[in-house]
Length: 189
Length: 290
Image (cartoon, rainbow over the protein chains, first blue to last red):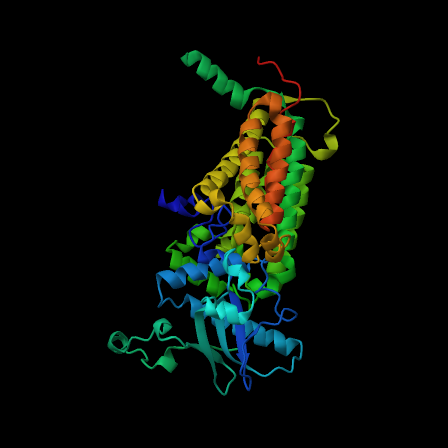
């Protein structure tokens, strides 16, 4: 019956589809926020909704996918899936910026944040200072630096040690590159 | 005893019925499929284009991660990686849905719709939500007895045991999905405690509800949560009894409005409205068993 496996997941919950019960109030239920940091800027900002109408919208299909990536991140910190999706966010954002002649500088870093989702009691801490005091702050699920070559190809290097996938001892046996920078996923833009 | 059970079983699934009862539910499901195909059009390049988030290489990675063989998730869309190709596919899917809604081609047009729906479902991999598996099942059920074309609605009545089978399959699948949802809710403390609606609003997953309003009106948050579950339970009970079915259908519409508007699962909720037509179609005059 294994060939029927794709059809046995009738509620799509294997990799994080919206649950039938709508919410468990688990962390996974809350869609990730995608933020980028541009070169010469010190603050993070959410992707521009005008240029990029996919992420950061609760009614889009992004929450379904974001839920899956949160589950993967919690199960396997070394999974490259997050790097792959981060790379595509950067690539898409920059290609759309180019198409719309956006004057913003290039993206230097990208991160996925699990936003603050306060309980009823925590909601009374409405100011950022109070939220900090009670330990309410967005959690970084994944963060990566964006690197570029002279030929405009881009890649991402996980900023968190846990997400770096290079394993020098194993890779040297197969003759693969071992440097972290080499392990970044480089693609032509 | 056994004879009675067997008779009831036959009567439930195969009692000959008027095939025109299928028309409305078929039109509703096929129109929904057209909307579903169309819902991908505004962001088709963002999702599936050459530089999209779910380009074919990313989708392949997801399939590999799941451990499925590629052939299991067959789709012509794997050979159409461009935005233009996928746009053409989606537009063709809309046309096929409309043809199936009209009833032109009968099972053939429904089979084509099923292939298009499966192809897109396989390509979007982890983007599938609650609606897609239900759509595939509903279209497959319609193939059992598609009913006459829409334009021949006034033609001579025709009865078939498969009309009853189709309606029963749709009704049973709908009932099981709603029951599974409400049982899952009842397995979770937040739905008993009364703060599930709060969490939906707090996570910005409900356009209709704001945390500010719910924070000032905690009783309403509690009432909405418990009321939601109660309405679902009442729907499941009353819709199975013929004499109270209209009440059950009305409550079902209210429950689905909750799923669509309180939890922003509008696509799923609107698809689940379609089998309610199958319940309503079943309320016509009974046809005597041969």
